[in-house]
Structures are given as C-alpha cells and as structure tokens.
Length: 282
Image (cartoon, rainbow, N blue to C red; front, side, top):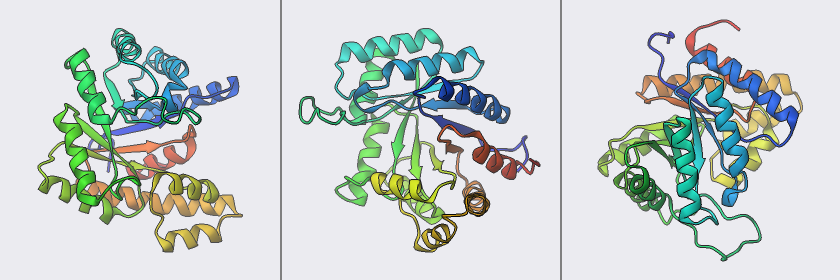
C-alpha cells in the first residue's frame, strides 16, 4: 500500500490529566498528522466527566490544523447541556461526532437513565441537521451486554436508521470475526461503512484488563505468545507490530473502508504500524 492508494486512517486520543500529558499528546498529534488522518477522535469520560478537557483537546487539535471528532454521550447530562456542547463544536468547525451510549460515573447508580446511542444520534440530527458526520460504535465480537448476535446487529441498524453515517468497531485480533460481522450486517440491510478499530500490542497486562472490560477476544494462540513476552517489552513490541501489521493487511485486502487506531496517546507504535502499511522506513 502506498500513500496514494492508502485507505483512510484515523486516530483516537483520550484527554490528558497533567501538563506533561498535554505536552506528550501535542507531540503525538504532530507525529501522526504526517499520515494525513481523516480525523483525530477524542474520548469522553463517563457521564461527561471529561467534558471540558475533551472540548479543550478538540479545540487544540483544530488550532493545530487537524480535524477533530469528539466523542459524545448523554451520561448524566440533560438535553440543554448536550445541545449547547454541540453548538460549541459546530462553531469551532467540528465536522465529525462519535455518538455513544456511554456510561454513568461510578456512584450515580440509577440516578439518571442512560440514553442509548440511537437516541443520541436522533437528538443530534434533530438539533443540528446535517451539520455533523456521525460515527457510532460496532462490535464484531458482540457487545458484552448484548442479548444475542442478531440483536446486537439490529441495534447497530437502529443507529444507522436514526442518521449515523458510519461505524467504528471495537478492537479485535481475528480478521474473520470482522468479515463475518460485516457480512451479517449486509444481510440485515446495513450498507454504511464499518471501519475496523485497531489496538497496537504494547502491554500484556493492560491488554488483558482492557479486553476483559470491553468484551474483546484475545485468541488463545495470541494470548500465550504475548504472555511469553510479557517481561520483555522490546520483544513484545516487535512481535505485536508483526501481528497487527498482518491483521491490518488482511483487513485492507478484504475491503475495509479505513483503519481507526486506538493510540493510547502514544505515537510510536501506531506510527510504526502505519509506516509498515505504507512501505515506509522508520
């Protein structure tokens, strides 16, 4: 794959908590901007707990000349708060919104009712018309709270019926799971783009923890290979780079409409993956 025929790329950040974290993120943005991404997405804490820092990161990205895609959920907020935030984003020149159900902060319990992603998409369209390109989440290995495989696809379809333009998937390491999911979605009448989410392999214990919480499967063969390298970070990084590069190549060859990288605010692993795919040297 060359720069000319490369699939669209995008990268996800989370709002830093420290001055050093902000400085690191600025460097990460600068490094990854070289790959001309469609956008940088910015996560949104449970119940809007990072609302202001998410907005600040979005504004900084735009000021630096990049396109930003803020994540958004209702969480514990009301319609007026979300409508005002959408107006701020529109005024700032934001073109993409990642609309999610999200979670309530711990301790809120049943104090507020979660607003599902299809309802949020409908709200955004009602408030803003076609102002934003709306992205939603998809789960090739099925959402951990799903009633069934088919019902999870049904609810994805409801997000698109409400006005979503494309979906970004949870990360996975089995290309067949993604292709089977896309085929099942097509049979259910879903023809919008479903962009695979890519998680670089950098830390064995962190991956186990993330995967347990979000329902992503780590194939048994991969789990053992990573465990064997858990105490040798250089070996794990090199092996992970090889595995994820091959995964991305399979996805591109199979017609994936783009690649969305979960960077964890680190530019080096993702940059090396992109350079591998573009045939560039480090």
